Length: 150
Image (cartoon, rainbow, N blue to C red):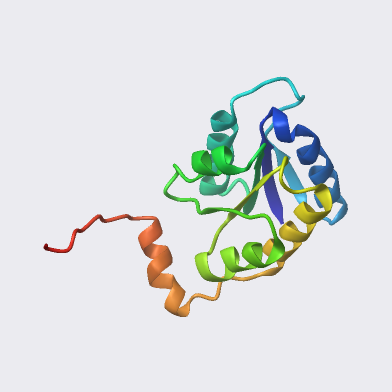
């Protein structure tokens, strides 16, 4: 599977370790940066990751920053991509099974490399269930804000 991965400076070391591990697992890794732990802005890397997944350059994505929050918000600005912020494997699996998430976000300051690997393994091993979840997922890409009458 082709997996895009991106981070900010706070998650550079985790990104590097996960990139090596993913390649050892037989995946084609598209590293979108950064190339060092020098200070960068996470939105730039989140937007690049979202575009890589939305365009089909990668099948899945891994987004990392200090908390995972900022980069997940950046990725989710692209309506063609669904990014889930997780910190344990069950949420990673449910993100795929129920929400058809194609990007996984994690915080390098909150999860270690072993937990990140467990989350990624669960994410990559789980298929979207479809069925009753499909109409909800369809709405995620085409929001319509309708207020109920008071």
